[in-house]
Amino acid sequence: MGTTILSFEDRVVIETLHHEKHSLQYIADYLGFSKTTIFNEVYRLAGEYHAVKAQTNHEVKLSHRGRKTILTTNLKRLIEEKIKIQKWSIEQVAHVVRIAYKTIYKLD
Image 1 (tube, rainbow, N blue to C red):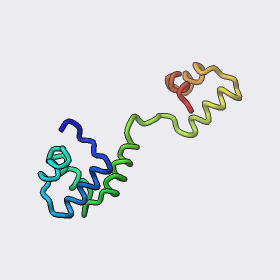
Image 2 (image 1 turned 90 degrees about the horizontal axis):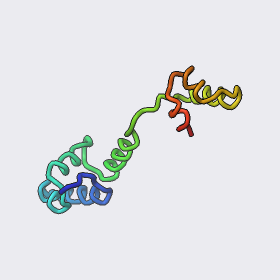
Image 3 (image 1 turned 120 degrees about the vertical axis):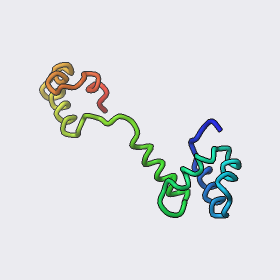
Image 4 (image 1 turned 135 degrees about the vertical axis):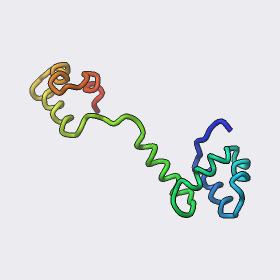
């Protein structure tokens, strides 16, 4: 019972057993998760539990993880213009734009 990350297959089993009216404790024991994990999974989405909806929701939330970038599309374009066209150094651009020069090096 160490991990609480559910796979799509786990979600399908939860959906099947939940629709068959098995208890949350039974589902938890069957999959090897805690009852709380199964409860949170089943009642996380509004309405009836569906594995596909739950997996899609999980993937959307997963994609929003991490730090937000401070670089907008316009700022990236400005940085590229200064470096490629006007031949500024990365340090000069970083000073003017007021961001770390390492951020500029990490640009795509």
